[in-house]
Image (cartoon, rainbow, N blue to C red; front, side, top):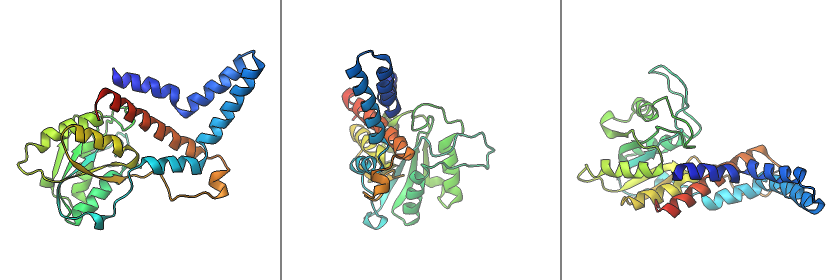
Length: 259
């Protein structure tokens, strides 16, 4: 039920929905004052959500900051990779793998594995995309495992968790697997930077202490040049969508006690 509620809530609070409602009301109402305010509000929201500098500042505030590999001390028994959107949703042959823009979530743990800082990789989920809307028919977790093996990870060092459909299930199902190992030890968690707060909260709620290693950053270096501060950008509107969706998801998880 919460899943449906969160999607309905997001549908009404996404940037384009808010902008559309303002303009729709402005065109519909007969009240001249309300019409003017509504149309001005629509224009303000367009400028707000498409402002590169402001959106980037919001992302910088929300995303968990990056960690350099040399800052990782000791050896982690497991690196947990959260799936969902790692592989493009394409019908492909067994030897075809199409990585998506979020593939950084398995590239970074691969680097640390190669450096001897992670012993095993647990790939969790991937039955639905990170957006939560569509089934990933490319069998994502197995595809990622196949790619990691080809890139040098030993098959016995990869553990698959294939049933999770959301972040809470990632945590609960990973916890069941990890407790079967006598010494699961220190856990390094990999997911997109904008999603890391919710992921860490879910894993801690499930009784798993993790150290976050953010990947797939949407924020950029702080920049207040005229091009990003004064000129609207479609990309910023798209990033606003991502951020608002995650804020709503985090809030819903918090309310129902998942984090």
